[in-house]
Length: 476
Image (cartoon, rainbow, N blue to C red):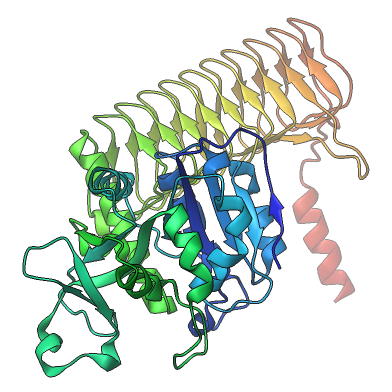
């Protein structure tokens, strides 16, 4: 039984991509669906969808889901793909049987694995082009890893021939076949008509009692159809992740490739093996990244920036010439050209740091806009605030934005001086050019150019210490 959900768009009729994503991934020893384990900052399945989307539009991508189907659907449905549910997981051939109605309108299908995240769009395109040019009924993507142990081997009709004689599983290899390095990747292209004609001929006559799409090669060849193979340029592209160790190895491969891509474009990354850079991060030339930096999510960094060690930047946009000193933590924020941050600054979601602004050590911002050239250099919390251009916020200043029930805004104009240890109780507005005395608690609006003081008057009692000590001695 299967159900199909369409998320808009019109099928192209010529090619659909089917992504196998129904498996549990038992060897991962995880409650999470296998295809939702992440490398390079996003789920395995999302990488495969992104690669397929370079070949066809999302409505022509059909994802076969099964184990924790709703969780998988929710994770990737924003991509616009369609879904077919394989309620009982009985093998890859059974998955295509479940997708029969969804693929029937198409002349051809490409079958990808949802746990093979390094597959490149160029390789998928090569399989598709070869399949079309040769008019094959089935085209198999192969690879030649250094160690092919555990994989089914490709036996060609003759050396150099594109025609496949058989796919032989590891346990069934003859002594002569043991030396074959070319493996079956599990990625295929099919003409839909012959595939559907023979789909119900698949049997469960194997050790696991499942319907394997691999067996379609033998069925089609017996029927006189053409079964061909084309080899991937890099064996790493077709590797999956069956264990956590393999998953981490794929992550390292992808991140190394990301770092190499950035360095090739003019970015300096010292000790790239120590940095964690997600696959979709973009960095402009002439930026320098020190060791032990993390750039995550959809982060975008301009040119001539300097990102110092131990900073973590996630889903942020930085302009040109930004200095991020050591140990800054930044999430969902924007930083304009020439701004200076840290060390140990924290930008929480919704922070907008203006051009040439300074956010210094142990300063935290949240949903705050800091104007051009404004400064908050030490030990300050700015939440739900707007800070005008050229304003100086002293050490230890706090915007008291939460009354226990609701959040309120603090508005500080341009050219304002806020003295150290002031507390600004929102909602409050401090107009342009005003001064706030150090240690003040400000609860009312301050007009432009005014000085506001909100602290107790100092009282000095000379000789008080000596008198106190005398009294203590008498009491003792």
